[in-house]
Image 1 (cartoon, rainbow, N blue to C red):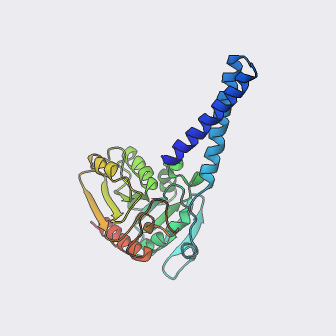
Image 2: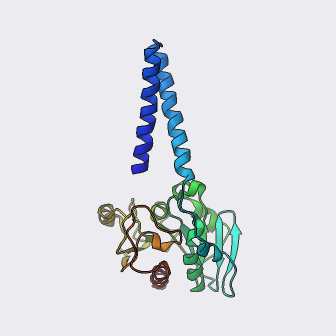
Image 3: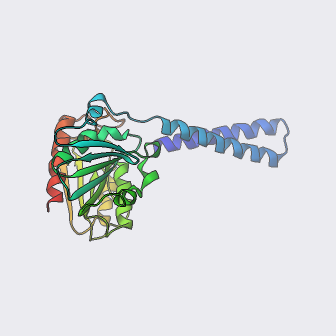
Length: 264
């Protein structure tokens, strides 16, 4: 929200600057207004491009999890990456956090796959999951599983919850990491919410208010010592607090909670 406000202020400043420059040159008011509006739109587009071009990159450790292991085959697909483990009946489609490189979540996907849940890690346009909300439908058309789950980290969780609220019969559950649903989830769909006690990014007032949207069968887990960025492997995130546990520990505990949730 802060970044969007900055973009808006810069664009308005550019538009006003163009208007007053043309006004001083005695340009007709209508023409000045139209050119100023054009300057506003152009500045918004340029600011938006710069904003989307800057994102959190996966670290080297995360990238190493894109290699096959004895238990899990990793395949590059049109929608991202497929982590094919020993399990055969349960699939999990994961939406990455906003402006986070999707491969930063490879360690989480690998460990879930090792535990028996095949995982689809989405690569989304401009690293914004909201631009590919219906990705689950495309994946479901190509793969067959008895049980389907969708989830995501931060704003990626919001995208997953949007999909779930519009397709209540297609998912067994939604898994939100440092996130919350912004629309009502059907009681047909289970919900697992996980966040770290040291999270400095999650809007906790909005999180509490979102509980009105939670389905009947919901579970909540607070990882003591975990923070916002600890679900992935991309370094420190702006505004976050220092974690009291390692990212490996946070991911391991998250995998344990997700696996238990899926077995209920």
